[in-house]
Amino acid sequence: MVFDNVKKKLGFGCMRLPMKRKKVDHEETKKMVDLFMREGFNYFDTARGYIEEQSEDAVRECLVKRYPRESYILTDKLTGGYLKSAADVRPFFENQLKKCGVDYFDFYLMHAQTRENYGHFKECRAYEQAYEFKKEGRIKHFGISFHDSAEMLEMILNEHPEIEVVQLQLNYVDFDDPAVQSRKCYEVCRKYDKPVIVMEPVKGGNLVNLPKNAKGIFESLNGGSNASYAIRFAAGFDGVFMVLSGMSNMEQMSDNISYMKDFKPLSDAEMKAVEEVTKVFKSMNLIACTACRYCVDGCPKNIVIPDLFACMNSKHIHHDWNADYYYNEICTVGSGKASDCIGCGKCEKACPQHLSVRSYLKKVAKEFEK
Image (tube, rainbow, N blue to C red; front, side, top):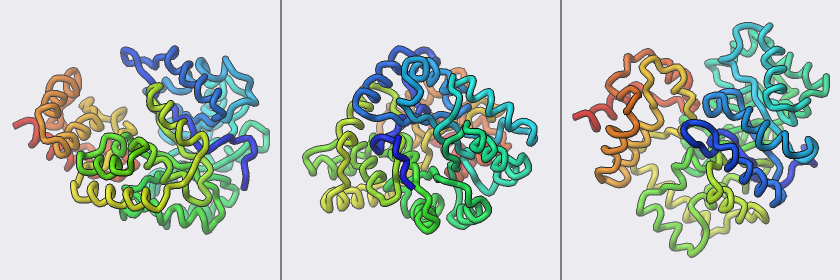
């Protein structure tokens, strides 16, 4: 399947936009949108829960109000947490269109499908209703974003052959990870001839801020940012028509544009370097958090879990005092500490990476709250 109106392979993921005092910086975002469009890119991705429900508003103000509707591609998602019953689906969808300021979405995805929440989507007749929206011309293409096993993905694709696209987490560290199953899920998409949208190609920034020995491997190639190898790795697979990057400043956007404007797959030497960097990551046993922040909203103790995990990973990578400072003076000021966890498990149900969040929080508390 070819989507003729999609230009180039890099998409602007509106999940990590530039911020100013906990609000999306609209002026900076407008500059980023302008550069993105000027350089010939046109794909934007949002969802209701992104950036504490600020993302759709930012898309409306920074993109929709400023560009003709036919000039850009906009993807939004139906998130199960906002639905109590089938009666909620259409009003929620209508509200999303209004929030974004558009009459239709180019792509509309059933958000973060897992074994845990798929039953809820079925009870709400979410797939059937979304397909009705497509018949009405208010969705051009219908699909899913997915975070579970290849077996589960195959079951969903069998039950819903109307699915046109699948959004998958795919990056070089997770590709053969048995928990994420990126390779197996990608292979299922190929089997069913479903085009793939890639999310988390740089694993929430983890593949940008590399350990020193991993960084050296890429530096020996004499060219290219750490992000470039991760994004080009993902974009090089057959059937991948879009790679999303959650860009949060102009520097990141300029870098991404520089190598995706005229995309070239990784060379043999670059692929070998990626394999070596993967080995470094696997040897460090870091917490595989992508900072999607799905776990934060439901935490009764207001623990900013991804930030605490980032401190833990930083401590393992750099072995210096900075992580302790950030933990005690920034990440836990006005928020809960790791030791405040009451073990309710809401975070683990929300986690797309299926992490044992509660056990990791115990380790974080042991490390930083001595």
